[in-house]
Amino acid sequence: MKHKVITISRDYGSGGRIIGKRLAEELNIHFYDNEIIDMAAKELGLDTKAIYDVVEKKSSSFMYTLSTTHFELPLNDQVYSAQSKVIRHLASKGPCIIVSGCADYILQEYNNVYSIFIHATIESRMQRVKAEYDEEHDDLRKYVKKKDKNRKKYYNYYTDRKWGVADNYHVTIDSDIGIDVTVDMIKRLYNK
Amino acid sequence: MKHKVITISRDYGSGGRIIGKRLAEELNIHFYDNEIIDMAAKELGLDTKAIYDVVEKKSSSFMYTLSTTHFELPLNDQVYSAQSKVIRHLASKGPCIIVSGCADYILQEYNNVYSIFIHATIESRMQRVKAEYDEEHDDLRKYVKKKDKNRKKYYNYYTDRKWGVADNYHVTIDSDIGIDVTVDMIKRLYNK
Image 1 (tube, rainbow over the protein chains, first blue to last red):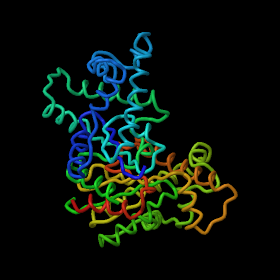
Image 2 (image 1 turned 120 degrees about the vertical axis):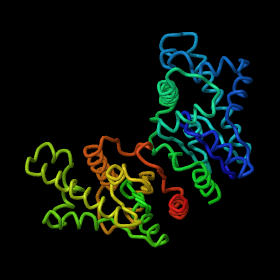
Image 3 (image 1 turned 180 degrees about the vertical axis):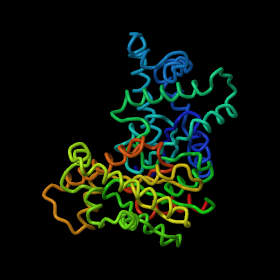
Image 4 (image 1 turned 45 degrees about the vertical axis):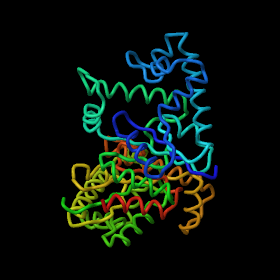
């Protein structure tokens, strides 16, 4: 591709989505996040809510679902396949930021795609989740760790990679260094 | 600490040392690399050559040495302990760049220390090793991978961390994006 694309994967609550939004605004390019899932949903003729429940399983482990619920296995695969198709389509359309767990893997063969991974300490992630999401949780640490576990399992299952390993990404950043400096560093990469 | 310190760990041949040198020059701060080992050597009353042979074992695996040669185990531990002492000393003296595999771990409790990990594809690392080091190797790929393995084993043995995992570092960068942009991104972090 001639234009540039930035993919952002992130640990839950690390601010990866906010960073992506800021980047898209400051670089004046498209931002795709839940939109991807919505488009994938439409392609499959499924309603978005059902897909969210599969992708970021709230009440039970993703892999548990995979191994025990026969009906949901093809649904997961369909969701992943549709998401991959949509991500490739969006990336090819023009410069953009794509916030999605497996986008680094899906777009690995493309030129001018820079893959970013955002992480942070569990403490600051808990703080961010508490401040920014309108949700109540008895055990916030446990909830954040469960979200991490599900994202990790989803990624490891659909790629031949391991979640959070530096080699998978062009750049990884601990957002505890600050959102502003994180955005600036990625902008520097985009504008090289 | 009131001043800032940047530690750089790197995969063999990824250009981490060159990046560190450039940063030190452009930021006008101290650069420490083999100097650390030299100082550790002096503290131990050992000659540098002997220490290099232990730290980056050329002819046999580090862990193999650990498990089979009883005489070398305490020497390894002495080297690590002396290196840690020297790294803490240098970091406390003033702003600097420290290129050393375990510095991120050794200085983890200090404020204003930013830990960087530099990696790159095996192909570009082989190219760099070929171009910049005056060494001949029958099987360069095997040689580079052996170097990686030894660094990884040394790190994993002396820290409770795993080599190359994003969580260990504030920033990791694939130097294939370019040395200039890598240096600029780290400078942005230092100057925040």
